[in-house]
Image (cartoon, rainbow, N blue to C red; front, side, top):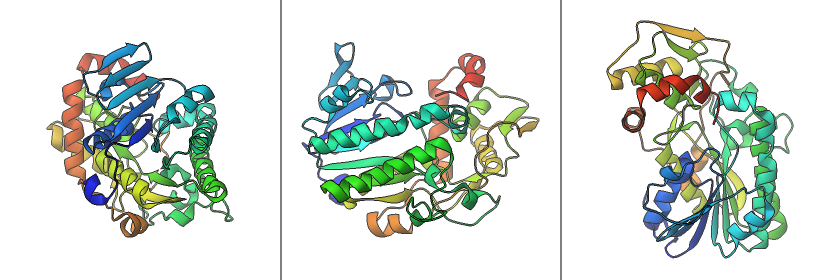
Length: 358
């Protein structure tokens, strides 16, 4: 997606990306810089890494780094004074910062996930007070009711209207993480309704790609192939499916939503086709040229919903967006990155911890 052709004029504008040293955030930063934006990143580095922003930085002090049009700040956005400083004189905010992880993390860290509500409200409030021109919020497919995703092999596509906190039975989010995201969406609409603040929410579905960590499914599967785990362990019976969506497609959706949506409404960024975990591991094995002698299925581990995919009708109509990267292409790019940036001995010794932490 070409940002200039899409009409999002960011050249010379001040753009803040919260969580910008994270997996998705760092790819968004790359895209915004290419479009000529002046970008600031606010990150506490609890999961993000400075090396995700692969630029030759000059260290200003222990919590600030600078490279031409990019400045990185280390700090906690739950600290009001830090948040206030970050949004000052900013035109556009992409709010991606959150305590999050894969299914293992959100299952065993419910209190940490709840703290996202504090973080979101501070960012929204201070951005509104500062007169920020536009705020785009990274929401999640976890806002959708689990009962719509409970049947293995389902063909149902989740629609934005399926997660509406003001409609009976539609507010039934996936664990504390999903509820926090849903409350963030509700707050965005409230800020638009009361103050006229221009806001948008993008519901991200099962993102994967370079710079992701092992708490998420695709990188976990790649990591196990990288160390040639045998028996090769997967969580669940492998028939659970997802619409794995490549990170650049997600970034393009965030940018398009920032351009096209102003009323705080939500839009899906995902795929309408899906892969089972069994199909995903077969694709990984094919691309790495290795296959274990035995596959073990651990049904005691967190597995999430049985089936998840997105209806992207609204994304096509409103954003003129649809995913462009095929499963094979995206898996190949992710595998190439992982194999080039990891050591077998380090992954082997840390994998059990990496699968459950951030």
